[in-house]
Image (cartoon, rainbow over all chains, first blue to last red):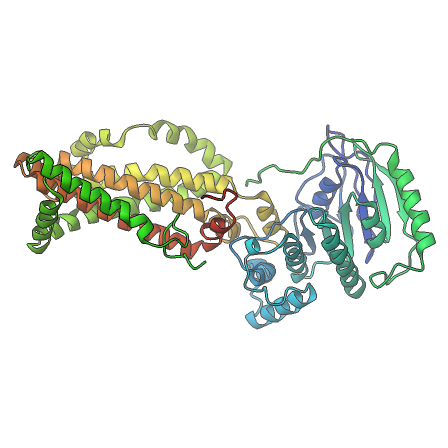
Length: 261
Length: 269
């Protein structure tokens, strides 16, 4: 599988991005605030169109959002009027799911609830959950439609250190058991090293690819990364060096345009 | 969540905390009327209550209420059926917004009571003119609140739906409508309140029945207690319908109207 980007140079845009995402890999996009890494992810999702160049998935141009590419957002995007179970099952009850039998949906939802450890909270509304639980539900909701590619936009960015650590490990476990192509945006170096097979370092505005580094740590990693400490530290230094030069960048640009028809 | 039925701002506080000021006000009324000692100017509450009771038992009040209620509800229903879809479409589609926005902005500030003479010319003295003026009044709060509710939708909700393949029309009822529902309820509350105001005014201008007519008639007959009994009825009706809408909103969108109460950032003493 390959994807190609090459985007034009508007003010805050990405510039000359050329990148292949390999099947089954965990790819982290890392860079300073405002480098366009989230925009790149939304372009992969098909929600934002490039000004120039093309994005391909399996040789087909990405023309809009598709069920085969699932997205987990930076902040909570759960529907507050639906319960956790209804949120997770949402993608299975829409018309595009082509009338999946209700029993099957329920089985999938309860399997996912267990996978992300939300047993007992199936009927809770998002407003009654903590930040960590909301992101667990968001990940489960994304997995429900069985997308071939998972796109994650700093899903743990708003969480406290401890919760973040727990969820990182759970995500690793999920990735290492279901093994699905994942593109993960972060600005946390350690998060990138822990999760990724490859780390793509983007420069500050305009976002360009500075380097693409292979993470030299063996999998599975979710049990312990210990024993690879030397490799870990050496790689962390390499990554830091690559990022260091322009880490001072301006405000974050979350795409906040209200979407209309 | 135990306070679902106790009103918008009630919380779990006991009922009497909010009822005793009403009792105090009625007692003050009674005392003041005794002091003034001029039933034409200010009848005592007890005599208004007696008049209210006799009007209720002889059926007159029920007839007037039925006439007013049917006008108010019909007018409100027309406003709701027009206002919600138009508000959703304007909020959702730029083309609809462009077409309607100035038309709405220019017609909103027209005092709708000023339309009564016009509607009398158009529809005659019957029910239509009154229903029309109520509909024209309640339309705007319903429409504008629906519109604002749609405009304020978290764009991530839309994106999330689109990434699981929800199409352009499906998104309207699966995301946009439920997300805007709290605002629609707010619009309905305001529209309903306005419907009572306009109803009274319209009935005073042209009607042979209804509470507005009864109040005006009481004034012409120098029966001040009938005027007060009519006002009391309106107050009770308006209150009951407001509570009904609150009750519905808390049951249909409990996620919005109930959760907020518990994590209010300002703790009141």
